[in-house]
Amino acid sequence: MATAIVSGALANKPRNGGEAWVRLSWILGLQRLGFDTYFVEQIGAGDCVDEDGGAATFAASVNRSYFESVVREFGLEDRAGLLWDGGREAAGLGLAEIAEVAAGADLLVNISGHLTIQEVLAVPGARVYVDLDPGFTQAWHMDRGVPFKLLAHDHYVTVGLNLGSPACSIPDCGLTWVSTLPPLLLEHWPRQPPATGPTRFTTVATWRSPYGQLEIGGQATSLKHHQFRRLIELPERVADASFEIALDIHPGDSADLERLLDHGWTVVDPRRVSAGPGEFRDYVRGSSAEFSVAQGVYAETASGWFSDRTGAYLASGRPALVQDTDLAELPLGEGMLTFSSPAEAIHRCERIVAGHAAHAEAARGFAEAHLDSDLVLGRLLTTLGIGG
Image (cartoon, rainbow, N blue to C red; front, side, top):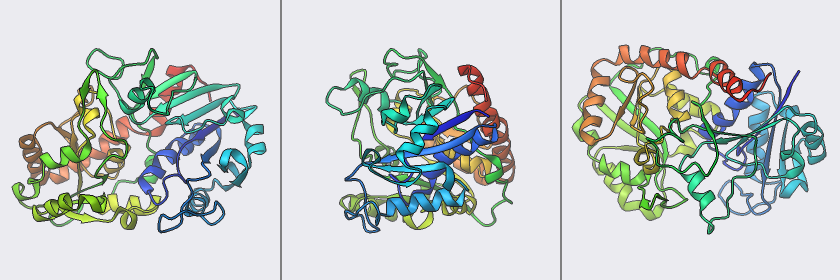
């Protein structure tokens, strides 16, 4: 049996169920394809916090307890390790145990380049970098003032479906990027009965990017909160629907929060409704549909970025209306819809409200045809020449 290691940020993003599913989809998806799969995460000495966000020891941190809870929930406790401060301490498998697994591993999937410990990174098999943030990743790599560099891997994979094409203005950094849709384990996202009552559009989001504005090709790109501001009046313009955001918003943005509420948005705490994988799944299932914007860099560069969160809505039989990032190669219009302008957003919300049952059926069909992890990962591994 071939051995795979997946690395990514789980404990580093505590109480974020949506982010947990991204890592779980790769881990469990590779297991389904026959790999003996391990999960490795590292966390810095100063990155451990308590429930209130204050500094904590590794042993007492919410990071560690969250990691242990999630891996236990998915039966990974014997195949997962959280390495603190380069491996000086660990939860689960320690550095020596993980290094021994790495010495015989056939595949390393390094999500967002999270893994930097050389004893694990230097696996004998294929090392695959997975880019979840097209535009950010490449701009940071090329900016000498940013402490981030794309380390050497054998393959570079991105959810920016257009990266490397003439249509996309994101620089390729001299690398060959292989595009992929995010994998989704459909058995964990069963089709749900149609939602009842008025159409309730929801999403989970962070208001202001912690990374700041980017320049691509000499042009400054906008951020997610700029996009939401363009659509602030949406709840007032769409009849028979409500709009809710599970929103991480800083107290310093209270003026924006007040404007959202004044225009009819409902705002809830993501740490309450999507704290873990189960809570996030329940929040998606309890919605009628997704409505969301994209980071400006995803849309303004025609990156073709596709959100794993949107995939969860679609698999659950929940239509998705999201800001267009140039997804022209995908079948759009039923179940999976996009918009570029406020007028398009209003019109397509109205289409979902008027024909929700048909859009819900089409949403699940889209997920089955395009996001099933067996198909997505199988196709990707074939493209990269990696066998299970």
